[in-house]
Length: 64
Image (cartoon, rainbow, N blue to C red; front, top):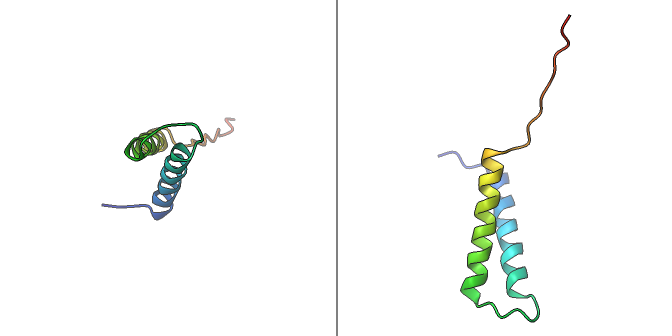
C-alpha cells in the first residue's frame, strides 16, 4: 500500500480544521461526536474529490 505523506497531512489538516471549527462555533449546540462526524464527512469528500478529480494539465501539441 502506497501512502503519500503530503496528501495524508493535507487530509488530516482539513479534518482537524473542520472538526474544531464545528465544535467551537458559538451558539451551535453540536455534541463532540457529531463534530467529529462532520469532520470525517468533509475529509472523506475531499479525499474522494482529490482522488477522482485531481487537477489536470492538458498540453496541446502544435500540429503542422
